[in-house]
Each structure stands twice: as C-alpha cells, then as structure tokens.
Length: 250
Length: 316
Ligand SMILES: Cc1cc2nc3c(=O)[nH]c(=O)nc-3n(C[C@H](O)[C@H](O)[C@H](O)COP(=O)(O)OP(=O)(O)OC[C@H]3O[C@@H](n4cnc5c(N)ncnc54)[C@H](O)[C@@H]3O)c2cc1C
Ligand SMILES: Nc1ncnc2c1ncn2[C@@H]1O[C@H](COP(=O)(O)O)[C@@H](O)[C@H]1O
Image 1 (tube, each protein chain N blue to C red):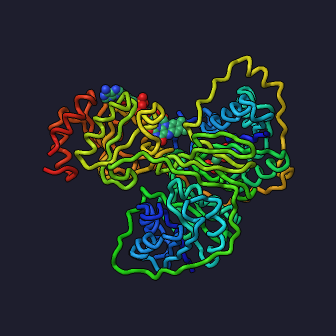
Image 2 (cartoon, rainbow over the protein chains, first blue to last red; image 1 turned 180 degrees about the vertical axis):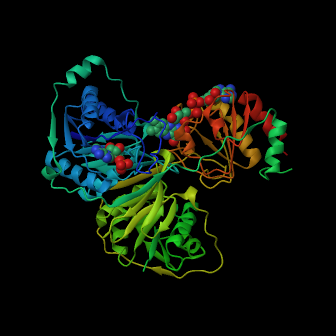
Image 3 (cartoon, rainbow over the protein chains, first blue to last red; image 1 turned 45 degrees about the vertical axis):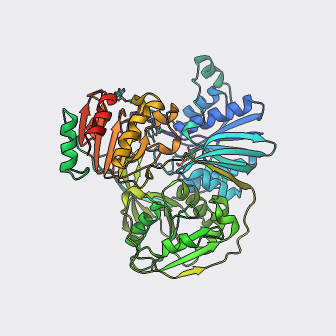
C-alpha cells in the first residue's frame, strides 16, 4: 500500500493569537510555526501502518511557500520516505487544495490519503471531505481508530453521539482526530538523515490547478472578550451569587 | 432571490436540537423561504413531523429510503446535490454530522464551503471563528459562486420555536446512484440518563484535576443535583476518565449553556473555544493562577474534592 499524508504549516498551537490592528489577518511575523497537530498524528499513523507491514511507501505533501519544506523535513525525519512541495505564495483554500491533492493522489496511485481533520489556523475542516468527493472515493473523517483487512479499512470515527464504526473500501481518504495516536519525537540523527531524502517541488501549473479563492476575507477582528469576574471565598457565597443570577433555586 | 435548504440532523426518531438553531441562521438569510430536507430511513415520519412544526419552515422535503437510515456522507451527498437545484443556500448544523457532509456536497457542486457560520452579515457575507475562536473572520463568497454551502455554529444561534403551524411535508425521490464503498457498521454509545451535552442549559465539567474515572462521581453528583449535563476537558478524555463524546472545546463540542461549571480544568485556549458563548462560567480550581479564572464569572480557589461535594450539598 502507498500512503499520501497531507501536511499544513500553521501557527504553533501554543501561540497566543493576536489580530493585526488593520484587520488584515493575524500576526504571523516572528511567530513560531509548526506542523498542524492533526497532521503530525496523520504522519505517525502512516508510519505505524508501514511498521505493521501494511504499507511500502509514505509520501508527504505540503502546499505553500518555501518554508513549508521545514515541516516536510520534520515528517521525513519522523520516517516518511519522500516529500512533495507544491510551491505557491497564493492563498490556497480547501477546494483548491483538494484539487491539487487529487492530482497527486491519482498520479502517484496511492491507496490511502491521510489528512488532519482540520487545520488549526482557518479551522475549515473541509479538505479531506472535498478530496474524497472529487476522487469519488470513501471518506472516514475524525478517525480515532484505523485497521486494515485486504482492500478494506475499518475506521472508528469520533462523532458527537459517541464512536461510529465505518468500513470503507480502498482507496480511501481518512482524516484523523487527536486520539488516534501519540506522535513520536524526532531525534537529531533522524533530522540529519532526513536531509538526504528527496522533496520534489511542483508548481500549480504542473498540477493543472489555478488558485481561485472561493471566499475572500473582508477583515479579521478579535472576539468579544470575556471579562474575569469575581472570586468568592466560600461555597455559601457561590450559591448566593448563582441564586442572584437565577441559575439555581432559592 | 434567495432560497435556503437546511439538511436536518436526527437519529431516526428525534430531531437533533442543532437543526432548530441552524433554522435561525437560515431565517437570517431569508426569513420567507427556508425549506428543510430530512434524509432518513423508511420510518422517518416522526422526524418529519418535528421538522414541520418548527416556526418559519415553508416546506419539508422527505427523502426516505433504506440507505438513508444511517448518516453516511458519501451516500447523502449525491442526493443533496440532486436536490440543490433552485436553492441559493445549503446549510447543515456545524456538528460532526454537518462538518462531515457539507464539504463533500460543496466539492461535488464545485463551490467552496463556509464552516461554522456564527453571524449572517448579508446573504453572501458571514462571520466565522478562526484560530480556535481567537479571531473572527468576515468572509464573502466570490462572485459567480452559484450556491452558498456551509454549516451553522449551533452555539451562535438560539433555537427557533415550534408549534405555531405545520409546514407541508412532501416526499421526494432522487435518482442519484449511491456508492457502496462506505459501510456503516455501528454506533457505540455510552448509556447516560443525563441531559444532552449539546443542548443542556447547565453543564458541569471535569478535567485532569479530577484524577480518575471513579473520581468523576463527584462531577456526576453535582450534575445530577443541578439537572445538568456532564462534560470534560480533552485531558480527562485522553486519560480515559470519560468517553470522547463528553469532550468540550475546539475539537470537541462547542456549547452555550446558561451555566458552565469547570472543575479541575486549567482553561487552555482549546477548551475555552468550546465555552465562549456560555452564560455564566464558574471555575473551581486549586491553582489561583489558572487561566480559567481569566474568563470565569465566578471563581473559587480550592480543592475540588472538598468544594464540589460541598456545593452539591448546599444546593437546594
Ligand atoms: C489541536 C489541539 C486541540 C485541542 N482540543 C481540545 C479540546 O477540544 N478540549 C480541551 O479541553 N482541550 C483540547 N486540547 C488540549 C488543551 O490544550 C489542554 O491540554 C487541555 O484542555 C487541558 O485539560 P485540563 O485543563 O483538564 O488539564 P490541565 O491543564 O492539566 O489542568 C488541570 C487543572 O486541574 C487543577 N487541579 C488539579 N487538582 C485539583 C484539585 N484537587 N482541585 C481543584 N483543581 C485541581 C490544576 O490546578 C489545573 O489547573 C487541544 C489541544 C490541541 C493541541
Ligand atoms: N496547504 C496545505 N498543504 C497540505 N495539506 C493541507 C493544506 N491545507 C490543508 N491540508 C490538509 O487538510 C487538512 C484539513 O485542513 P482544512 O480543511 O483546511 O481544515 C489539514 O490537516 C491537512 O492535512
């Protein structure tokens, strides 16, 4: 089996987000950037599938500016075999990204595409579903369990009502949730070894896709903040406050 | 002219509360022309009746067929695409159901999807949270996009009322070829008598500070006294104290109860993303510097194993 894992470079999840004063997005200058945490889990899962003898090759792909190669290198250091960098400085939205990923999935002839369930910058939660639609293949979103049997995969999906078991035929698209696994740490020697692995650079034109944004941002603002309220000393006081607000019976 | 179609979420018997909230979003786009599609199994009449009773619905489309008895996005999407002609907006609740489904629908139609609409500015312009709700983006559909596909964030809209009149229910058929490559096996659910976390007016949650699954009994006892739902932080779910469907936050449930009591939860931004719209937030934490106190309306510093049972007893 051949696996494609999709990786997005995003503002690190620990960074306190600040909106630019002019409303033109959030501050990213000098801010720590990382692999989207869900994508790290997707890479880890691909490695485990390969280690279990169910895959021969893991390709990692990222769409974005030059710097996304840092995240591709991290994935290669974790153990992925080779990388594809789709180089662009344009704003790439999920529909466009999924068209590019479709092209790559088909030309590489992959059996499984793993993506994060959402990128934690735009929180779109769309790319995997869109890729599956364009590819006319199954999708198993929000996966917290994944196993293989012949040409089938059994997935456990974290849905609002509990855990859903969905069986899909391969090739399939799986988007991963946080509880699927815990990604390994990258060791320094692995980082050195990863330097020797190849990253193919492609352009949008190579993939026959144009970056036509479907939505545009008219401005970004900070959310209405919540104010810190008051601290009470005793449970009795707490109950009085709740009663005063009509939240519990007198 | 706008015309909105909502895809109802239900479990075969009961309409999910998020659908009535999605209706409020839809009515902000067009107050006169909102229809709701119910995709369900052959016995989905009860759901259709609940949908028809919602205030402001012009028509209910019933797509009853055996394959629709379970919500598989790959099976639902081509049918919705076939229904889509004539509508300017296709919206589902921003739940795992809607988030799974609508991007698939959008891609089949060749249009973008707008996730988590929290406010309608104009029929083509919406506010949505990004960066776990730490920024709000106003997005406008590009010119030439024939249909807006998206999901409505339930915590941002009040549920539409019901009962004033019954909208007509029309059975419709589609000829879309349905794939067999995706097979629903089962839903594993924790049995619980407590109210539903997503719609409960009161929620009591526990975090890593609760320490174990057994210790969660103190959380449940308080929840039961209040008639509240029980929730948890990701750390509590990851540690195996409770099931995943109790997780509140960016990657769990986004909720807006009148009262939220966080016990032994530090208040990481990803957790706060799930409770920003709560009415009153109460924090019980032994660390006076825990970030949860920066957003809590009422806070009390101390050991949850003393304070939570004390609170439970003090409540009338
Ligand atoms: C991409 C991503 C998505 C995430 N999504 C979510 C999400 O949806 N929901 C979510 O919750 N988290 C999410 N997280 C995790 C989040 O960052 C935090 O790790 C998590 O919320 C911490 O949970 P906690 O507050 O229970 O644990 P901790 O941060 O460990 O806090 C435990 C708290 O309990 C207190 N405590 C300990 N003992 C006691 C006692 N006896 N009495 C009173 N207080 C006590 C401590 O003072 C501390 O404040 C996500 C993380 C990432 C990277
Ligand atoms: N620019 C990108 N490059 C590579 N993968 C991406 C990109 N954007 C999104 N993805 C993948 O799609 C997933 C979901 O992203 P989104 O739909 O934007 O929330 C991410 O977790 C990635 O796996």
